[in-house]
Length: 445
Image (cartoon, rainbow, N blue to C red; front, side, top):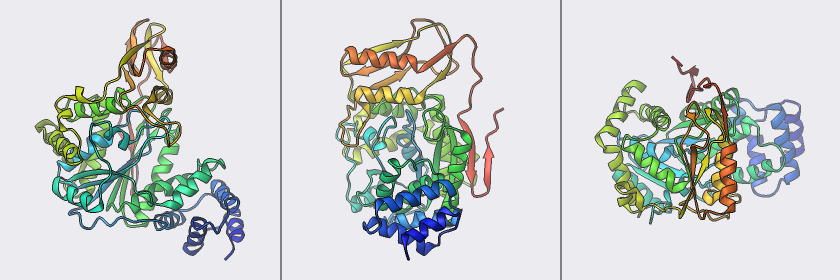
């Protein structure tokens, strides 16, 4: 078998076999296939695409390239959740304890943030003392004991995907739906879950800028799940503005705690309930989504979800008193207002710009080796559709200092808002659900 023949076959629209895809992934992982040939193959895929069977075979080959976690020592149906990333997306901090409180074991591996999207591990490490490194035995024991554990990803999970992604990043082949789908799903499959729920973002703060592209990506990932025997569903949600009001690690933990108290922003609560309901149904604890949502609302109202979060924090070495006293979380020394430049209605918010503003304050990383400041970030006070008067605060910057750099970020924050005379048409948060049965759009009544 020759790599050049497989490049030629895919370039001409052919379908690669399981053996051919394994040859490519294994050869590239071992350094036997050079970057220039794998780049040519990735570009052929970019233009010719892959069918569901090919994409699933590629996914499994990448999952087999490194460690695969066996979650069988954990009791029950393990349901994983993945978000394609966004601004202010702290859903795992809420969904984990909420779903665990319904009797679904949540055994999750999460990553750190890079660029304008935050990472779950960074948010959790904003809690004083919280440890995200557990042995496999500690991980299993904790999930069996309290129903929930979240740890950092193993360094040897899907090494082929890490190597291929780095190559795609510098060869203009990132925006290929089969390659994105296989990248995401290879990590989820290697992590050992029985079922997978995906939150696929679309809009200015998301990787997929249009709903049609987001649905195509979701369908590709759901098809992979079906091909490899993992129940998979996806929700397409809007990221044309930040989720909730907090952007930044400790600030997002504070907002997650408020949401678990039943006092969180309506959009964040709505999305968490929708994703959690999917997980509860796939986990076999409810026959349908309506019953699942009723269970979840009960766990919020009773305080069971908040209690689960407190137990989770304590189990991983964190200070559980932050649940009752969020002021114990890291706090920035300076708070600077960003104000509206004119009166009117907020017609649009560039979510990616606000994510970048938080990163510039120190809440995120430009490179994987950057150190982050857990305390800094943004608390926005106006969202799309809100009325604002000139000079009103639209956001508060939690910063390391009230200096020129912070004031420049405040100006950038101001410019991320489009304010006009008329109230805008409101974009719904939840757009559609993608399952093996097809795409079902949410009613917007």
